[in-house]
Image (tube, rainbow, N blue to C red; front, side, top):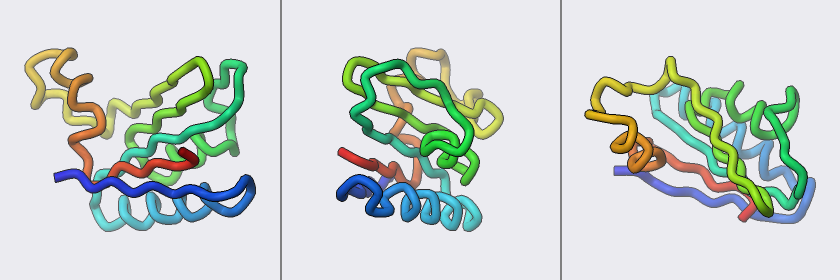
Length: 108
């Protein structure tokens, strides 16, 4: 069963700092964690070092989604995913955020 946790607050309030801490500690304890982050940026972003999505991946999240005004980007780390338990890619994509112990939502 997946648990869902949402962190919201003002800009620069420490949402990502708290989220990255939680992802790091929970993955150290063996939990499988994914992150879905929201931002108001309109241009396409890639995974920029030292930015939030990059930091979440570095802290141990095996999937990080970034919602922007007109785009959704999904960062996956295949080595952390057990794709052999799915009969096809379609089944995998349907279950993207259901196969985790915790799905962390930030900034919504």
